[in-house]
Image 1 (cartoon, rainbow, N blue to C red):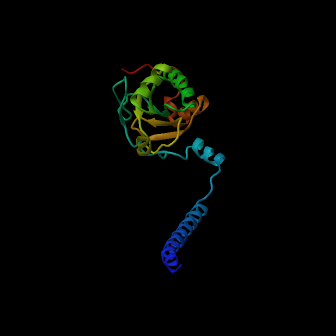
Image 2: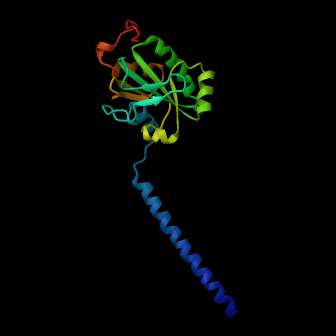
Image 3: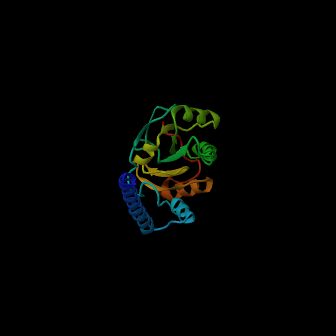
Length: 200
């Protein structure tokens, strides 16, 4: 009997110490969660659509030069046009496939603006999306790490940049949002239907 007690006592002591450590750690995690302000899903969506997410308005986009799959290098700061739209999308995003036709049409209607799609996914996934959705816009495949470096974690998400690559406005997007963002983001002298000629 004494041998059994001598053997089980250290085991029980280790179990009690591990449980105590677990309870202390759990208490700290619960306190940390309670200290964080709670953001409801509705408020989170409101922040995203208001543009509280991503690179701040007025700041320069973190990266200005991209290598596209079919259109060579794309320089957000070196364009001869009046501004750029950078659209974040993902190969696995159902909502993203809805913006491809919008962007394809938008690039035809607004030849004064460059458009680039940064597509989260592999090169093969990006090529498949280009073919499947008939994307005529320059596309650059990016990774989750690239999205972190570009300070953007949602898609579809769009930035409107002025010539030098400075963020004018941003947010989650649909057709109406895209038109409003461009109108809000570009100076008044650059707005107006199809009166611009393509600069070569």
